[in-house]
Length: 336
Image (cartoon, rainbow, N blue to C red; front, top):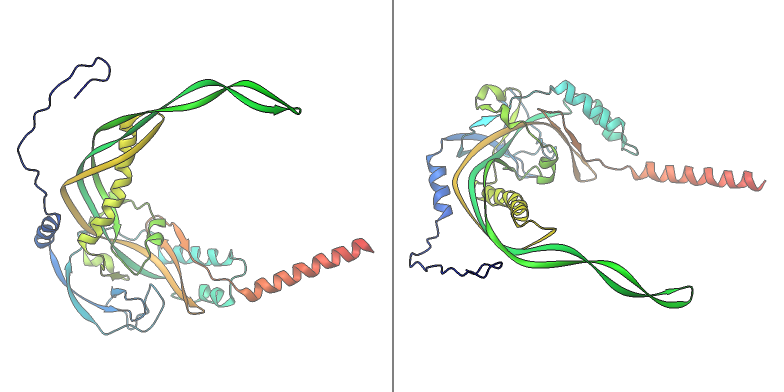
């Protein structure tokens, strides 16, 4: 190791100790084996595959995720028991008002969608499964730091038909190697454990007030269905690492400093890994229009609203025709 400023050199002794890779899957298996499980009975949607544990008071069930009535027979599975949940804070009535306000604000919406907004039971309550992961990370990186500086250089240009040379300040970047180590502690990295609710929909409902989590009790599910997780613990960790990686790279750039940074290599070690299985409440409506599923979602804690909407091409065509007729009439009057 040689100091770039004074030239002093220090020998780094080589160590014969082997670098041992830890089996992450085995660690996850131990975590899952030691966690509390439960035998869960639910139904499966034939259309989208959602596995739902319905409110036992319900006589019939439509799939909250796609609106279909074609649900399969009940099935039993041994699943990790939820550790915590967020109780419902936004009532169905308040969520329904948001639903109707949203639909009434849609231009060129099909009449069938407006009828849905006026129907009773347009929204159903669903507890959606999530994982959270906590862990400590240590990351070794190698890259480059770029520091800007200015130089004055002659620049040839055309001015009023003549070629002239003028001095101009130009920004340049001086790059030098950078390497180091950053560490971070992650707490409650949230990962969707459902395949029925697309990830982009779930992420738009964030943030969740996870500080208000309460220990799981069946009583909280009264009036709500609960989806069984389909994304397993190990698969969820892959997504959690992707989320962590973004923050780690921000830490690396801050550690490199300078005006610009390049990251050539990044090796992260994860330790002290823990997890929780959570249920988070959502009011949702799923409806089909021309063989396509559209969803309306309300975060039942914060009231955050997200929705998809179909378009009535008949109404759009009529509006275009009416607009064209109005323009034609205006032109005729102007010419007259």
